[in-house]
Length: 256
Image (cartoon, rainbow, N blue to C red; front, side):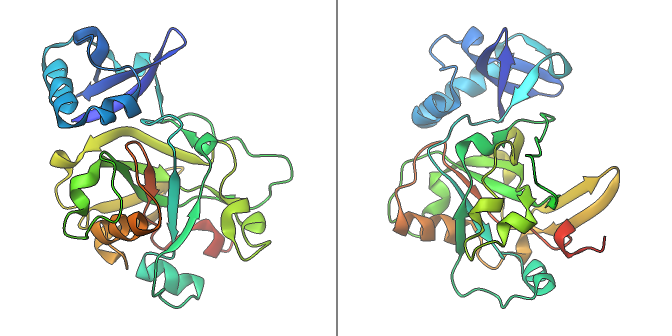
């Protein structure tokens, strides 16, 4: 199932993307929340209700609505750096022994085809395609073996970065957490549809040209280990977003 948050008459609503149609889940079943985090908090029973609604509800063409980030204002947006072997190599870093963590602000999130706003003074902005993990079940110190049970699904993400600001200090967050610097979506694809998250092709194009292309199998720290590791540090809650790092080919390593 592909879950979306979209805007209708100025209101954010939860929906299911079925082919080219968006099914309003709350219209189909008034028990389904209009907020994605509330929906995820409902657990498997609520996801089952959403599946039934997606099969029976009336839809509108996806091109007639504005898609927002699938999850609005999550409690956490946690990111991994240097998590693809080829990217660490191109950047001149040793492969990390532990996940390199930083964060983006909740206000960084935007939806599919919403504009990225370049702030005044920013001169070195470029892209990082990433697989995003969306947490579905509250977890703390979850084992690696059970970590995927805590994942609701996955989404595409772009860890937009201002490179000069990023490297002003040893901590990268200044160049990462700017408003609109994390396009997410267009949908949250539930885990049952994704299959193995450690064997997914990932690609970014710019003006029709392929700039990044790899497979998540090149990750140094795979999806279950990442969820396990972060849950040792902080409690993960439904709607939390984890960006799993970018493959090689970022603009910052290109000339020009």
